[in-house]
Length: 532
Image 1: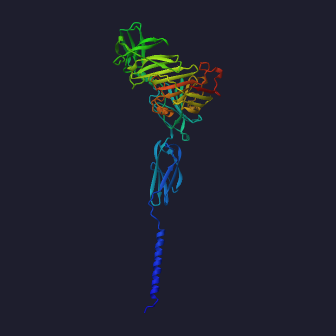
Image 2 (image 1 turned 135 degrees about the horizontal axis):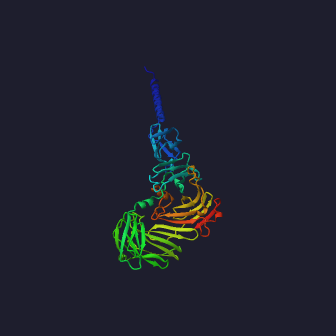
Image 3 (image 1 turned 60 degrees about the vertical axis):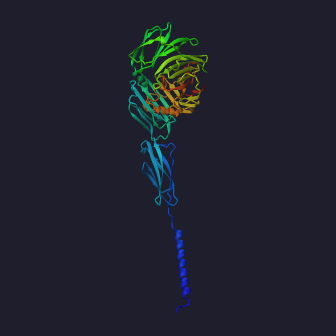
């Protein structure tokens, strides 16, 4: 017989057991690790906005994870650079081990659950300061020519220098130089005769083009196709005519024939009848004709001068300048803007310029304007179109002390300016962007000893501010050089780069442009303030 206490005890035991089980299950749920379904994050900083780097750079790497980060990997072009378990660290990259150009940096964060996250950045390595492929014909226009290039820092100290040769690939490097910009000097030397140097300030690392000398003239001579002969009939009595072909013109009166050297494969023939302008006592075209067919060297063309009947158009321009001269050319083929046809030379008298031109006989015109103030200041225009005589406004305030140039060069349209230094056998241009100026004349590297000197004649020093038509700003001017064949060669030639210029002698005395010999010293030259 069962005890009367059996069931209560059994029930108590069961209840206790259930209570323990429930409690145990409850505690087990609280201690379980939740599933990790989130990837980590990663970040990379320390790269310049433009991505251009050189020498050794420091990468700032950071990563985080919602639970546990395992490691962070940094790769360059797929090759492991470093690994770290830290959530924030620095990674040093020696870019000297990489070739110049674009490279990809990858930061990969990996957590304990195996999840990954990547961030990438592209850098452009530029350990080469100057990359220059010298043309094979760089020295072709003449014998005994040599070229040099050197880089200087802002204090004028030489960083690296090299002589270059025709057809050579020049790569200037300086692992200890940390600057993003420098002064680049291109030197052209004709043995025993002359040295020409150009120093470009604020040049960035990258490609460059050496300046050639004489190539456009050689190209002009190479296009010589012989003499073209012109036979004339029916001239007007006591009349002077001007005959113009591309690159050449001649006046004639009373001749039955003339011969002209042709420096183009073919050319339009422009003939004008001339009269004398009373105000300036100079000839100008009153009537003209253009032959319908092109002429060429080695040919003979018959010209009926009675056909010179088309009247020219007279233009009158009011000028801020009291005097000055204008030369006007016609461009028969805009694709060949250097092949110019002479139209007229006109003169500004008492602030009035009068000139005649042949209307729409040419699709484009090109003119040069020159004006001298008499105080050592000069204005020039080399522009397409008809002359308007708009004044090029700029202000030059420069102080020269020995080998340092400080001050300002300003003007809304000024793209660049040149400081022109000379000592007789050596010409040296310092080329800079407008604005605040603090330029140190570069020291001369050892390889140029006996070829170049660091001095000049102060009273021959001029400053030229330039407004280029084809581009705006100094950086675009440097890009123009990088995209050219021979650098700045031909930039000032007739038909070359369209521009306006203002030139001033920094030291002017009595209209001579020269200081007395006793004052020709370098130290403490003082300041020249020019407002025009």
